[in-house]
Amino acid sequence: MGCLDEKVYTAELSSSYPCSKNPLRGIVFYNIEQLRGKEISVFDTTLRDGEQTPGVSLTPEEKLVIARQLDKLGVDIIEAGFPVSSRGEFESVRSIAGEGLEVTVCGLARIMPRDISACLDAGVGMVHVFVSTSDIQIAHTIKKGKEQIVEEAVAAVDMVKQHGVPCLFSAMDATRTSPDFLRQIFLAVQQAGADTVNVPDTVGVMAPSVFYGLVGEVCSYMKVPVDVHCHNDFGLAVANSLAAVEAGAREVQVTVNGLGERAGNANLAETVMSLHSIYGARTNIRTEFLVETARLVERLTEARIPITAPIVGENAFSHESGIHSHGVIERSDTFEPGIMTPEMVGHKRRIVLGKHTGRHAVKQVLDLAGYFPSEEQLGEILQRIKDLGDKGKQVTDADLQTIAEVVLGEVDRGHQALVLKEVSVMTGNIITPTATVRALVRGEERVVANIGVGPVDAAVKAVRGLLGQDSLMRVRDFRIEAITGGSDALAEVIIAMEDEAGRKVSARSAREDIVMASVEALVSAINRLILLEEREAR
Image (tube, rainbow, N blue to C red; front, side):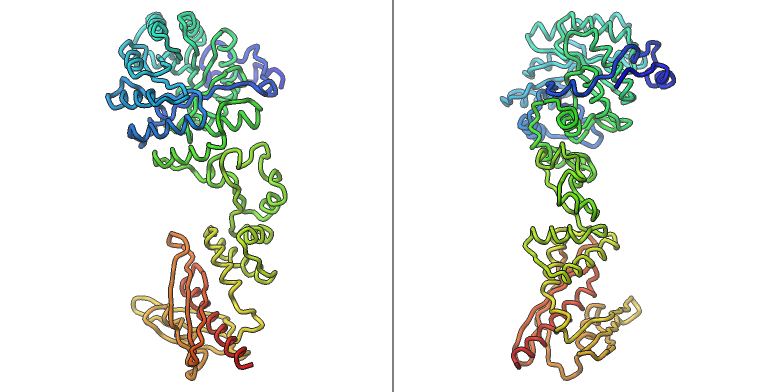
């Protein structure tokens, strides 16, 4: 990409970047190929900013579990917490810092001696000092002059460095800070010994192109690495983090599952996999543990991962559409990125069954599960899946296996003495449950109605009535089970029958409608018993 015309962004910058200096002036957009092989550091703040997610509160033990997992994942730095905020927070940070992890453990501090002392006393390997630098935050929070802020920031960095600990300095609300003041304070803390400076988009107002310009300008005058911390108020945290890396930032602050204040922070998995797969950059993240880490944090924080979440969501590598499923089965990159596979992130590819499912996908799933239906049986299985999908139900693997076993266990249509045509049921608090069944009995159409103590009982009696009064077939066992949870669960009915000669058979059916499942199971059992009688007679 070439340079952008400054005029294009004039109106945008007046609101997005309320400063007189245009941060895009003279900036040439980075060719992402230049990032190939570049090392990007990953700073995880799940235990600090992530815990500030409204409704999330972690115990010290839970924070230690997450810290160990982040160490296993391979993040470079863990921001373990804000030690001065409470005694419990101090002990939690100290516990993590003393755990002997490979990762650098960082503590957060305002530019105040007591905050810094709390971090140092907790034994952290890095101190992250911060101060507000935007006019709005200076005026309404710290209420100090800019010169005093610079002096105190320098003193804070100096205090950390005197104790021989690396120091990260953040200009809070940098994206709404005057570029001249941002430059002044960054150069001052760099002179004082800051090891890294952070450009936070504290309220998430940056457009990626504008943030690219701002970070590029900061990188042009800083000699120490530049870090970014992006919030997701407009859903742009990951995009802004990537734009910052393109502009020269060499460290990104992220959280697992994008947790954090308000709409959260840049998502760790999305940022890292974009860097790896799209840009060809390198991090120390062991990507095969991304899904494992996301689910651990989901469980401990009770902040649910959306099923459509990229990388780690349940549907990230799932396919239902017949066209998509067929393509992915033949070659995965037909309908997946290709540069990122489920195995790379610890996920699995799934073919989801529903009303959009194609014949090819169903056969593939059945083959893998060890079921080998005929073409006619496959068509029946597919139709039942689509019927369930049309009623708004997603078919689980357990549902599919049950449907397959039911269909495969049915008597071939050509050998069925009893062929069900129609079932209707009436029930209610003032109506005696009544069922009417229409069927072919050895080619003769019969219609029978009966009542019962409930709709299932009425339907079963009606089916038995189709055989006439002389039939001595008896139901010996009748069981109903839900295959999966929920009010729309697939009901499995298992029926055992016996005739006067002691012959016994069992049959099953599975439907979302418990009455239909019961009727189908009974009809299947009757057909099996009649077929067994006929075979023995021959």
